[in-house]
Length: 215
Image (tube, rainbow, N blue to C red; front, side, top):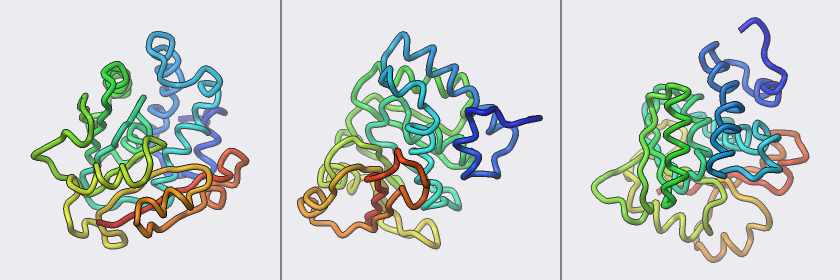
């Protein structure tokens, strides 16, 4: 690309190694989501103009912290309109992402976006995570879907108990916001926590966190 489009600057100021194809895919997100959001509302009207900060960059916090290596298989639980799975699939074209949601119309949008962007590393499933059988993954990812205790209960049976990446054992990676103390206590987990305001120095990321719980 001759010049990075202005709307992508919120992404490229933190991620500088995207290829031209990846930048084009990121740029397409705005048009494709606006089109499908008019038909099937998956992003709030007030958020669609902040797509790159509130949805794409937020999703990419996982890439900023975890930096997936090798070829892990990743399940996105309760993907909604495709977050965090679609931005991560753009970032990691050689990693397989399985995006699941219990609401069929949301999976339709995910499929349409993946097709428009020619993302070959995405599969989808209209189901609840707890109903998935016969499949195993290396990581489960999620963004603002359910309490930590439920995410762990759903994801644990789906995770391989091994180390796929040298730096991180397989586990659950989720994006959360607000006061996490009660939620963490109820989960009986001891997750590693990153304050996203320290990862991305932007007002929006105050009181937003990334939690990682190994299997």
